[in-house]
View: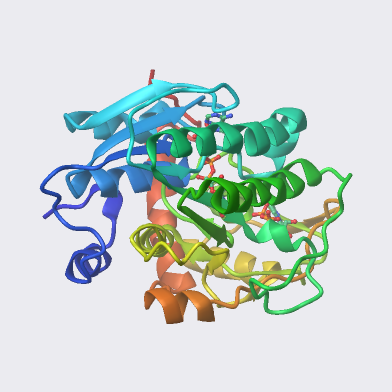
Length: 347
Ligand code: NAD
Ligand code: UDP
């Protein structure tokens, strides 16, 4: 079988062999909010391949129509232009709530709308889940831990978050969303799954997304300066998209008692300086590395403790940074050649 979006064949195979995804006798009706975004479009592809009905609801603030264009060949695919800040009623069995800009420059561009998306959007999706008895997964984030004082980050750590800084619309919005998820679970018996995603990268990130991996790759391929913020000693752990989507469907299929929060990420930890060197090495770029001011409240270090996911789901990432970067570089290389270096939106 050819998998959409280069979803690694061995990963897709293991998802079926482990019976996480099964060819359904009756397809489930699955709503993916934010389905036209980076993670959402990969998820929609995998669920459609498995034979489910997928409704993608997106306001296209950071998502791209071209991400979901190839999915239109599935009869079971429906695309709705919708902002989750507004209520909606749809007959569904499962919800993956991914709608929210994830890149700091994008979520800070309209911070009030980001908070509304996290809080009102989650509330609307939880009401929808409650009405239809649907299971709902929340795309939460490692930003719950803020600038962490516990390392690596374990789910029981409550975090160190600035409530009124430029990152707060996202960090506190996502924290409030977790509160809503657990209160709907406790008071209205909604089946919830809360996953805390650590920096994930891969094909279909926008070239102008603004996050570090896509920035460095695009800069290297264009021969532009590679911009390290701060001195590059801050760390992150980078997960390749296929591994993360594998984790999503495993969490969704897990017993109802596993509500999370559960960390999903790759525990390999790199400084931003090391990432820049790897990108330069893999692209053979002649770009210079330049240093720019560190953004306010930029977390110093980040690495997930994934022992809960390993124990409960038998999940751990399989694609290391070099292999994931190589695939991502290939994607951007093709994209930039096709679009003459510019981002092109397909209407
Ligand atoms: P993305 O920006 O590519 O995708 C977000 C999608 O949500 C876009 O298609 C956007 O148009 C849509 N959207 C935004 N606000 C909306 C709204 N109010 N109503 C409807 N649609 C809306 O980002 P991504 O990396 O694919 O992230 C997806 C989810 O995963 C987000 O919730 C993000 O917070 C979470 N997450 C991602 C990462 C990561 O490293 N990729 C890490 C932590 C958490
Ligand atoms: N970063 C950088 N150069 C860039 C973009 C980001 O040095 O062009 C740094 C950023 O300051 C942070 C790290 O890379 O320390 C990861 O940033 P990103 O925006 O990808 O994710 P987040 O900060 O949300 O983890």
